[in-house]
Length: 147
Image (spheres, rainbow, N blue to C red):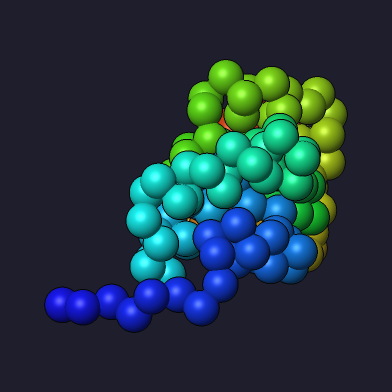
């Protein structure tokens, strides 16, 4: 299967993508590859972007965590999502280590938005527990909210 040659350079395409939102290095590499750029050109573009600080995995990680926190997700889910986006575990832990108070507050907000009232029976409590677990909160955070 023949792919068309892209109209602009890998660097220009990457700058356009980064102007819209932050990207991780691996995420941007995959995006450029899907547009038909060759690996050598992609690598050169990524090095150039990093040298100008247009591409920064630390900044991407911080922005992604803030965005997912605002949407009501917990540290477990955010960690998993960042790992699938090619961010190193050490970098994730460095940025994800907010205090437990912050995560409990996030769990509380997510719970209030979804349910708003305490569970009266064990079936309802289990439903609320599963919801918070799906959102990526730890069992310690969930117990503090539901008990």
